[in-house]
Length: 95
Image (cartoon, rainbow, N blue to C red; front, top):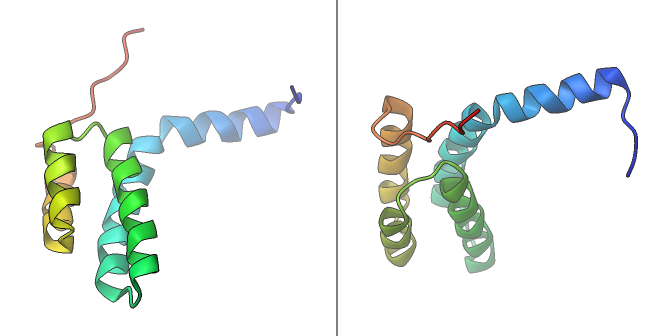
């Protein structure tokens, strides 16, 4: 495995410390991208990315399945709203 410099280690550490905020932002951007997507291939790739992001944010599995079954960007926007308002919270790992 590659050795990282102290500077690189700090950057990597900060990335993972802020992963939740980055994923929230990514999910919001995906909503916009889905509305603007013009081909089925683009939409499929965006929905795959949305699924992965929702799973990282620990959105309940039943809700993820519902959103993916309907493939409605408005439903995904509701998930974003709930995540940002704190209705859906990621559990903190035990230390």
